[in-house]
Amino acid sequence: MSKILPKREQNSDELTQKKALDLLDDHVNHGCCTKSKNLQDIKITNLAKKLAYSYHVIHFKMNYEPFWEVNYTEGDDSKWDNEAILNVTKEDKLKAFAGEFARSLRPKEYFKNETRQIIVPNSGIYYKCENCKGSGFNLTPKYSCSFCQESNILTDGTETSFVCKKCNQTNKINHVECNLCKKGQIRKILKIKINYKSVNDIFYFNKESVPSDFFQKTKGKQIFYEEKIDGRVKPLSDFSLKEMNEKSQQVIQSNEGVIAQKHYVISYPVWKCDYTVGDYSFFLVGEERFVYAPQYKSSVCTIV
Ligand SMILES: [Zn+2]
Ligand SMILES: [Zn+2]
Image 1 (cartoon, helix red, strand yellow):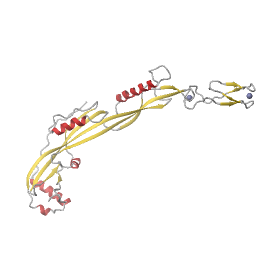
Image 2 (cartoon, rainbow, N blue to C red):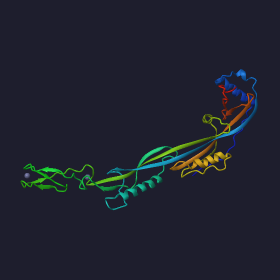
Image 3 (cartoon, protein in one colour):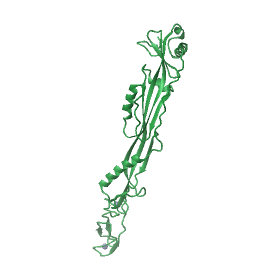
């Protein structure tokens, strides 16, 4: 699913030379060592409106991490094998399945960061407990005869009584359950920690090298927008700036694990104002007309 807005032309607001000088005058009064009276003789020799652009790509990425957890209550048992005790190969198969499962999930909201843990369905598998050799009881408990204090040693936990070799009395045994398993089996389920995250790329295109923070504070106009929630968008190919098409080709393909992507273009008007101070120019940026007067040569003043 994607939506594309048609490209729109900027409304060309007229900017007079007087207005441009007033803005420069205002700028000088607020943050420059030149006093505005010094500007009285300055004239603008040429005024040209150009467009600058920013190109934004938002990669919405998914990554996941499968992990096994000893768990006797959650999830369903694996239906892949009837045997209660599965081998390592089955574990690997389930891990591969976890990847498939992760990719089949959808975020709660696209382009919004999110982390959650999910049980992989039918991943419950059982292992024979090595601690109790599957008996469910602690092994090799030492018992003493309660009648003659003779020590006796049992080697498994299955018997419920023993007969003393010395006094021939029958002793009852109360087995201690293995604390690592249930009835000799360990159950594990596979969980995945899934992480959705947006990564933003921004590129600025302006021939006059206006610093990008000017474009960050001005609003601009969105002239193109496209999003895709089942993969990557198509790179720009017919935009008026060749460099932007090339950048788009390159950036769209970057990043791994992209499950959704959007990109858009914002345009900003930039007025280049040539004036009678050497061969220099100053710039008015955005509909807000922020003044950008670059510093020239070794001068510490932005105007002269
Ligand atoms: Zn055990
Ligand atoms: Zn005894």
